[in-house]
Length: 96
View: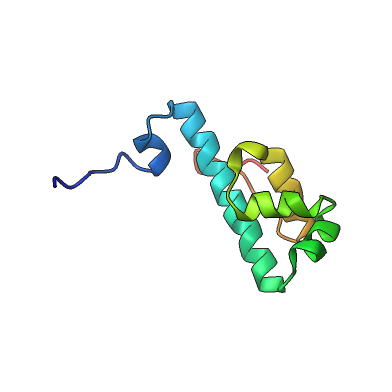
């Protein structure tokens, strides 16, 4: 079998257009950060849902990686509620 050379990320490799691939990478990073915080805090899905103001099935969707169900702004708000502010960097300049 010939080894596969990646284009940069799984989203690029799967053929998403550049804009969609960037959006998916951002959502994946935010979801990963949320999961890390939930694990670090030792929260159950029920506890996390109360803290984040969402239903328990939404936490389950997050943990199962259902990116298409979450927007970037929703994920940023969740991280904020977990005490982890998000900073945006564009062209090596902090924008927010």
